[in-house]
Length: 95
Image (cartoon, rainbow, N blue to C red; front, side, top):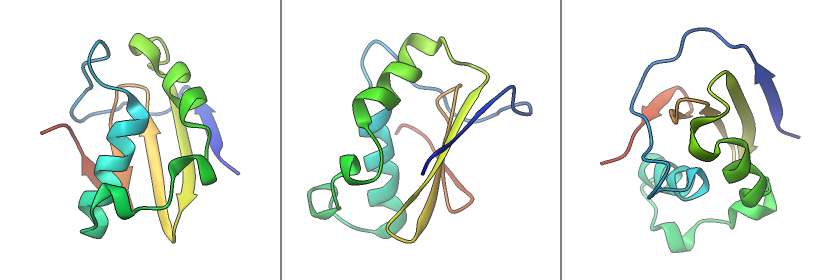
């Protein structure tokens, strides 16, 4: 079950362009990079978290103090309100 934290510590990292990117797609890209797997071969994100709810929570940067942490295929994924995605302690940003 995902953990949602509001009012987390100071955040740093690459932020998303909320007009062109969805956080759920960025999570898939980060997982693919971390596991060296084609994104199409990954287990669907909706098996572990609702991607639409995740996108809505972080829509247009309105949840800057929020963080969601959830398990995915033996990995720990954290999404922060500034758009930072961390998989097993490694920060992943947009390319």
